[in-house]
Image (tube, rainbow, N blue to C red):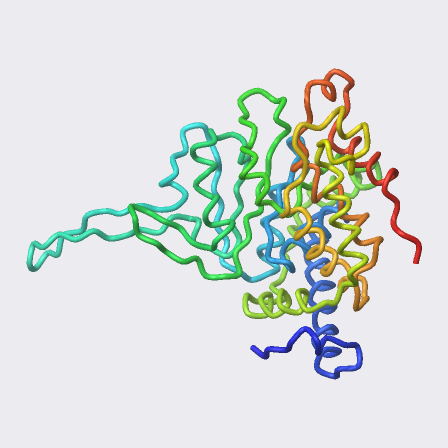
Length: 344
């Protein structure tokens, strides 16, 4: 895989132009294959693709029947990567995710040795289906893998080969039999993308697509090595210091405190604001979005478009927000209105 420094990322570079054209072809092909199966949900598909191109993880939140699991399975087929699925249930154990050591006996010598049996976490695309159906102890088995691309079992350290993506689905936490995800777990997800019900026209297309003998099959359009090259290309995309400062300003404004940088409604409704990861992910996701739209630089509009899905799960509201029926989306929407993008 060729290596190009950040200073060489320019529209005038023939190699970069070729790589960007290939990037455009890959993302268009993935969308086309996914849309053979998934009707509508364009913003959700874009969020998943940005997560893949950045090397992050995506949390899909929606009511039952909104095609969360089907979307993840379809994307994994189009990518041509190793795919594993874990169905999270209340009795799931951490070893069911990471794997465990077993004792094996050599039939010839009778000598017994410990042998590690890898769990489903050792994959490229991991579907954590209904992740909030299992207690936090089991959810925490994903923490090391999501941040460090590794897994520790009985003191032994096992690397996970990239690319590695956790695409998790969850039902709203108000439903019976669910466990809220710990803050440390939530913070490792690049996006928390909300799936809503489809429009009447899209529902009609779904019924027409799924009630006949025709079963659409997505085709493989890329591979793991190319995904890693795309991730490198995304990180090489330039971003102006003013755009970075604006992203940091938005993130810091979600943190209530005596420094006076956050609006009054933040101080009233928010207990804890977004972490530094939010600023990192805002910039990385902005780079991917810019390239997906054919631009060689990150704009203010990228930061504003991605601010809510990047930060909605990182803002912890207090009881005042609950009593006034304010959601994190409401608060972040007000923040974007209070902090408009600087004029060019």
